[in-house]
Figure (tube, rainbow, N blue to C red):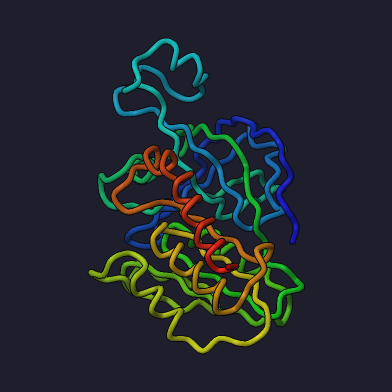
Length: 275
């Protein structure tokens, strides 16, 4: 499996070209502008960027130097960092597409996207990324909630020709489905995030052989499914892409602070499987 090269992430400022309400809970924002020249996405299907968003009432706007802002303003006015997966990158047109899950005024990035208009500026760093479907796998398993939908959608056209793939995506309800071939849509409804998704995966008869597995989204169900795929299918770690993008009840800042502890718990799961 190809590993992501280690390189310094460049800070850029993109200009909103257009926006689209794709589903009731998803806004698509397309960024352009000269600053996107050489953006460099394309090797992976889970490329992501780190948005840098000024809080409401901040006396500055993009472009800004985050270190200068932190030196000159109190913490409550510092820019907020949010991680978003690249839905698409068009190198010829120099257009970057990001999909934002929205829930009214909840959060920071969602409300920004819902209010975004052509000409608005968005500062971000990136791209990072590490996953693309492996040609050597016997079959592919891709599982995620709304937050992983952009990465899964980007991966579908990159699956090897004729590949066997089982793809599960959990969204709130039927109105949040998108026109994506081969996806099994799971409706969350009133259940906790990931509960219906995990049940759907475990109830499906999956092929033998070694799959390439992508499981991303809310940290609770991601950890649970990781234990299952490692024990049931004995997937080599190099063919396993797992990440807790977020966690119920946590802001991204708090989740990022807690994530080393989560990673340690995942490592303990791994050790228990090899005893």
